[in-house]
Amino acid sequence: METLNGDYFNGGFLLPVAGGEAAEKRGREKQQQPPPPPLRPHLPADRGPSSRERQGETEAEEREQQARLSALEAAYGSILRGLGENPERQGLQRTPRRAAKAMQFLTKGYHENVAEILNDAMFDEDHDEMVIVKDIEMFSLCEHHLVPFFGKVHIGYLPMKKVVGLSKLARIVEIFSRRLQVQERLTKQIAWAITEALKPVGVAVVIEASHMCMIMRGVQKMKSKTVTSTMLGVLREDPKTREEFLSLIKS
Image (cartoon, rainbow, N blue to C red; front, side):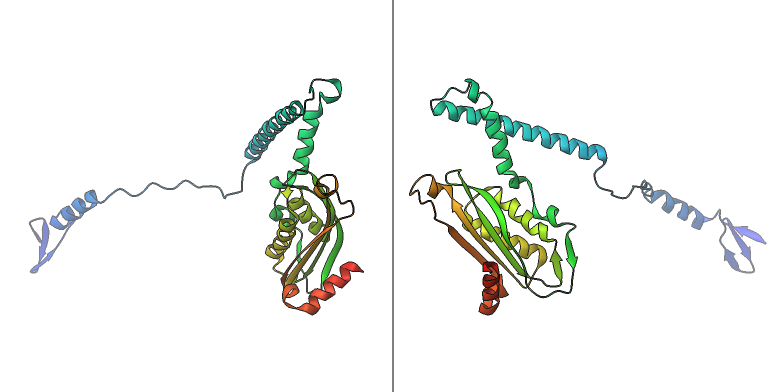
């Protein structure tokens, strides 16, 4: 067997070997190829924020709340001076701070949301009859005069294979009433929140309230009450179903 130009010659056939032109070509192509990408490090599964991150968020929220409290306290001090009072006299020295904390409590609904309240309180249930929670006490602040209005809320819904813990309906009322409000908007917000969370066949909300802006100022009508309602789904479309709800909250 003889070699020719680096190939074996055997009976008229050329058999390429590693040292031939084909091997050199493969070597050049290999050099021209880009290097392989680096191996990706193994990343742990996303487990949400760490305890340190949660602590940092909590501390940031506390600092923000303290800053808002200080701003409210200064504002109430200015109000007292605007009234001709002396905020430094004994009976008023701590009044701006107390009033600021009270206002934060009365408007705490701005920092709450329905999803967190209902997260673990919705249950699959084969129930298609009306569920009513009535006479839920409600306190809110009129956004026009910053004086209270208060009364009772009646809630009814027809489930679509899903129910909610009964106390959570009262919590929804609390979320939206602890804000600067008008009664008409408050009624709708409660009804729509229940609709979005449960996707029921129908929802009804009725609020009966007394407004201090009509009782202690203005027309000063001591016994006046305001009634608002929001009906959604079948409770709006079907008069018989609506009448059933209205009769049950009056009984």
